Length: 255
Ligand code: PGA
Image (cartoon, rainbow, N blue to C red; front, side, top):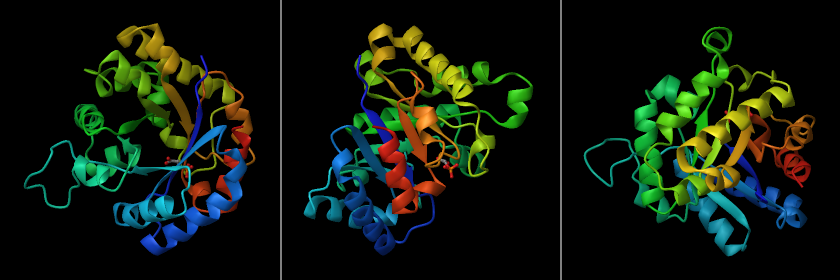
């Protein structure tokens, strides 16, 4: 089965809405010819979503839009939180759910990740559900057992059709923003285990269709090594997504 490669930029807490609008236009110019082969997505901070959405619409860009988090309730007294329909109003396609920084600094657990995954699908968007181990886990319990639990608990309660549309990003915490990465083979092993977990939960068609991304210090210099692995369907890119040139080079590597 052909899974369309996805390269998604996680802009974290870096861009103002004005900076983000310029960055999208710069990216669009550089990746124009790649659009048919690779899906490109950008995930600005909440305050940048409206400007990003407007640029994408007015310039008719084939760039998908994602948010970096969402609350699972439709509305309510949750000061500072953002509801799913606030994101669909801005034409978001994706929501990053359960990034390790949300887990570490904002208390996300597998249980709340699962609620956010559910709410994202219910609103008509697709979750990019993140998983990945710390160095302690890697040396102790082991990466695959840990990640399998994250996937089982985070992606529980879906239909097989939803599981097939899900995106899962495998991001070893020790590789995020550090310049260190697993070998492409080691990353592929974990991505294969993630796919197998989805297969055990939802059947072989879902396993074949689910897109599994690698994330953690993806750069133009190493991207093609990860992309040539059979179970890696793209990348979630942090630091290198903030410069149009390096992000576009990663997109080109995904062709
Ligand atoms: P990085 O971040 O590419 O800067 O390592 C990846 C991420 O956190 O999604």
